[in-house]
Image 1 (cartoon, rainbow, N blue to C red):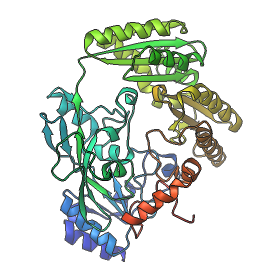
Image 2 (image 1 turned 120 degrees about the horizontal axis):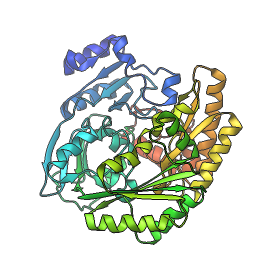
Image 3 (image 1 turned 90 degrees about the vertical axis):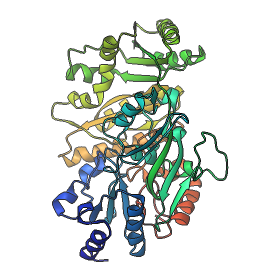
Image 4 (image 1 turned 135 degrees about the vertical axis):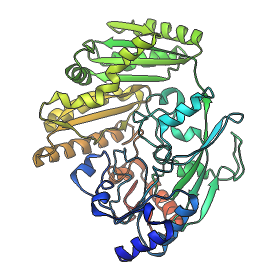
Length: 471
């Protein structure tokens, strides 16, 4: 369909206020936080901002009838080109649809629309002594719809897991405009093993199967106590060894973060007043629960960490905890400071490896950086083996871009070789689709078959998660 006719039909369907077609405005939808989007401009033909399931369904019917690609989008904070229209067509911006429909305290669940911001949801839930546990670093920006689409997790996945563990049901508009509800059309139960688990199918599907328009989430009681142990290690290998010893003691922290030497140096250059202690690694163990159990677990972790660490501190006072956590909270921004003329790029930033391989992965990434002449800062969620890498280059220099791309390719392949994954929480998008067969083997054909069954015309977020059959 000619673009002008498409715009006109969408305006007739939604109203002019929900259709964006000005070339300047469309530029805002041509990128996310990924390095790939920084190097390219994937400009959509038109953007729509529906505010009801009926409007989403009507748009999908138009797109389906005219074979127009549709890319669902939340806040656009992703790092894999997942919400960018790499094949052109229509972007469906769901971020303005931010209604918290109902907080069902008695049944420990909440009903939300996809544009609800994670931090704002937890602010509301706190009024009832509840919270939604997954905790991505972009909490003040990212949407619940985006978290569901990417099966996000974050800092506290060690204890609380990924988003999928909290999604009880979904309302989804399929590519042809049909509306379905997963998890039971009237259900408010927490347990349901009836039928195929379609909810889990759509969680983490990154918009390639349909548009999520309503989410039913399980929520938990908010912990009353919290504490942090900081441990400094002169040897990198001692850090994961301490984590294992904590687990073997029967303790499950809510989060365990690692900063290697590159990250420690970056933070101290960026914020000298933080003055992180020097070592090959720093671990931050966070525990939460009732105050008495928090105190016992924190002191026990301190005792265990002291066997290997050169310096250990335990804190429950809010100001001191904030001070201890500050180094971890600024490391993503601080990474660029390791090179005065450099910029941190989001690529190869999200591998996941077995816990026993974390030290090997960090050492290997350091060696790969040296091999390709690229400075790399490493940190991440060591408790579940999720390693974040931050290459720092001058993106205006083509030779450095090429070096970074070669480095990132080797980082992804390293993760699979070590028995891990190319992504632990940020999703596949377009950036990692080429590794699907390497990681999953023949299972990719099953994924493609499911995609074809639900989206026979291939209009839903094309080019994401895995390459089309035959490519």
